[in-house]
Image (spheres, rainbow, N blue to C red):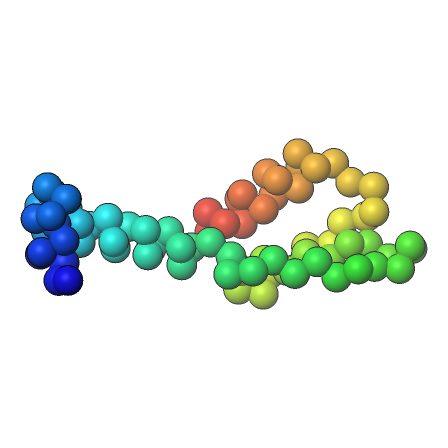
Length: 77
């Protein structure tokens, strides 16, 4: 089924359908494809790898809210 046919079927304009397809694709690209957590030895920090190879190391005892803010700030870049 073409995009035009699908848009007609669900009752939206084809341009609206294309816009949302682009928007969702753009958002998916801006999210990390995966997040890797390396299991540390007890004395080693936890290392988190986010998109574009950015690495964050945190001690085993860390403030979760601060880490959320750091990751969110990095994702906005």
